[in-house]
Length: 112
Length: 113
Image (cartoon, rainbow over all chains, first blue to last red; front, side, top):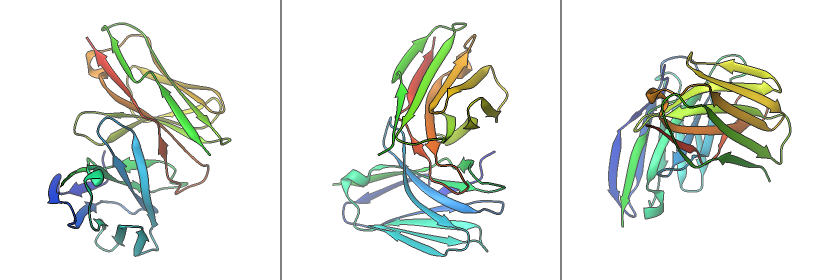
C-alpha cells in the first residue's frame, strides 16, 4: 500500500515562480525523503528530513515536516524550466527503515 | 564515486518468454539493493530488496524472482512473462543502516506483447 500521497497531482507555473508540493502520510515515520524523476529516467534523491526535524534547506529547495499533521511540503523557489519533472515523497518507517514507501507524485511543469 | 548500472534500457518480450534484468553497483560495498516497478503515472512499487548476498525479501507475490549472486549485483528474473509484467523497472541501492537515501539506475522499459 502507498504511504505518501502528494498534492497536487499536477502543477503548472511560470519560470521564476515558486512551486509548492505537499505530501501526506498515514503512519508514524522515521524519515521522509523527496525525489525528482525526469521523464523516462530514474529517480534522483533531493533531500531527507528526519522525524525530529521540522525544516531543511538545500539550495533552492526547502522541505518542512509536521509530524502532528503527518504532512510535509517541498518548496522550490525561483523555478527554472529544468525543474520540470515529477516529484515524489517517500517515507521510511519501522525497524531499520531502509525500505521506502513512495507516493504517486506531483508532475511539475515550469513554463519558460 | 558510486555508480549504478542497469540494462537493458528497453526490452520487448513476448508473453511466456523468460526475463533477466541486471543491475550492478560500483564504488561501494555491502549496499542494500532494491527492485521497483513503476506503472504509468503511478508511484513506485517495491518488488524485492536485499541486505546481503543471497538474502532476498519479496514484497509482492508474483511470477518474478530476484537473486543477488555477488555483493554488488542484483538480478530480476521471470520464467514466463505475463502481460501484466509490462512496466518501468528500476534498480536502486542504499548504504547499510536505516534512513538512508536511495540511488536509482535509469530503469528498464519492459513491454510485453
